[in-house]
Length: 206
Image 1 (tube, rainbow, N blue to C red):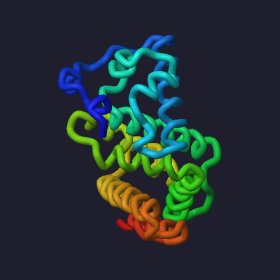
Image 2: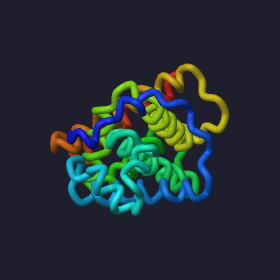
Image 3: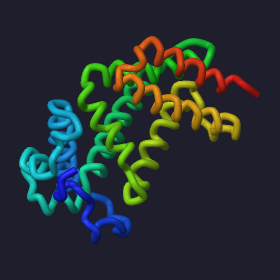
């Protein structure tokens, strides 16, 4: 990681930011889009903060105010990808009486989307792996969105039970491990789906 891509010490313990204005939201969207394009073309190493700033047409200092490091930026890209998938699932929910196949189908959709952009997938997963405590809030949002994606797939609209929460955590861990195994060429999409289905069966346990 280049020095310019590391979190600046003064930015690692920032107070909560106020809500973004419409102009700031659009600027943030351009930054995420520029990072996504660079990652899709060249993976993690291709995402350099100066190039992201140029692609988003913002000053480098402005970029750092939104995202203190490349890791913060790519975790935010992953969150955006998951939120897009969540919207698709809510518009076109999986069908069937058994929740396990519905969850496996939903998360397999995510793998198929990532299969089309393997370098982007590699960049996002590496960012999650590199994330330290300074990125904990962003990582928590990724985890929360993944958990809600799973609950949406089973049609759970109320608060989940303790057993469901435990099952969702196991499915999340399985999803992440399977993604790493697939990216490294150690697992096929079929094997990933089988692992996800096995983990999702925990949702049917009392």
